[in-house]
Length: 194
Image (cartoon, rainbow, N blue to C red; front, side):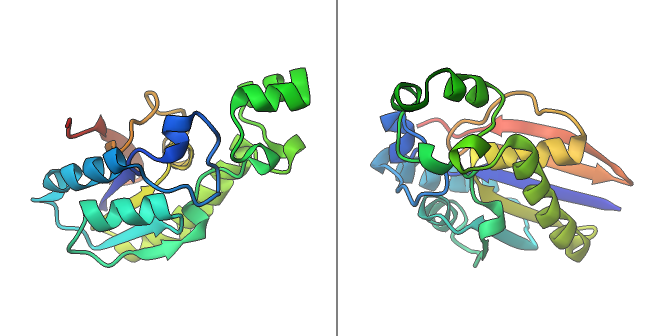
């Protein structure tokens, strides 16, 4: 079996510029984010995808429309960003002022459960459940998942059994390939620079 997953992170969103947690709130792309998404389209010019899956948040949907104009995505809230609970739309400094050391310690390990959200294990389980559902439909094929930095990292951890090689920039494209039962990283965080 030979499968390929292209992961595409959304373009720059207002939360990236504002330094606040976007989480599962519908934070839009900035104008730069729209330009990044459109500039990413050439990276897919020679790629034949069987299917595009996309988060239901507008920053991902708009990225998919601009970067992959020839495809009609299947939207899923399973691949939305981590739920950060009450931290949504707040900066880390605002959260620390509200919840003090409890927030600082929990954020350091990716745990938003005390604030009504998810932790990294929950996010990885959610992404894993999605992958286990869709991958059998595309054996010996290629798909693209348009999602979010945290969600893509969690999906990569699920497939590789370890953390990926670092974060992803806005509109970063990463490629994982499976031969037999083993997944490997073929490319990580490729971007088209504006």
